[in-house]
Length: 291
Image 1: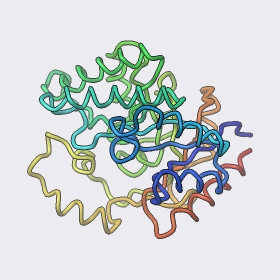
Image 2: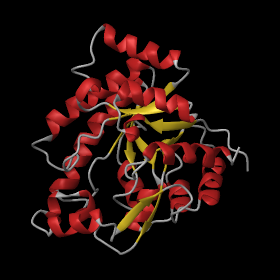
Image 3: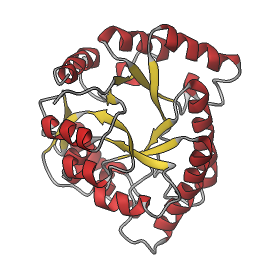
Image 4: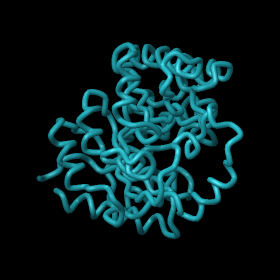
């Protein structure tokens, strides 16, 4: 197996700001970058006018390209119908920014898709995502849901209800391993028609826990969140680990991506650790070993 996919890095993983993070991404050997575009200098309401083209040129001059923007608005995603109009409009502006900066992918979390397809939360999420799918379709763009909060099969059943492929998938194998216990290889095969971007991350699950508590949900308000948060902080439920040290079978995962014909980015995400730059540098080498 010889990978030909380009290697990306989430700039924010370095924790040093956008410009310095871009330089570090180049230094560790990445070919592309993913950048959070929700608040601060990358907020589409802040990065306006000529500043957008100046940033695009800065990235190009470094020899990088943008694999995707991250448009995760937090909270319960799109579960709250009352909050959705504002979130939908913000998501549209982030997609506009992405296209102007030269990428057509925005990744996000939408909240956990409920099992009850007839309930108000499912309806709120479906309504919001249908509007976003139509908008993304109009731009030739993708609003890509990150895997992990629910099984691949359940996520696919939700995506199948939407128009076109405007709402697609950002595949993260570690989230599946750490939270739902779902098999990333089977997940790739199930979601093959929707995968437009991927993360390369590793981890291990120590105990079974309700994903709704980990990610937050309107359905779990009032549960022992403080207790769960403490356990998460101590790594007693799951741990994100450097590549190759967790339970993601990368041989099988990369092979599955090849089998479905995925040609997009393999973007490294490192959300924890005392020295993320060193971990990211090692991750780049880890992926290159498959070339």
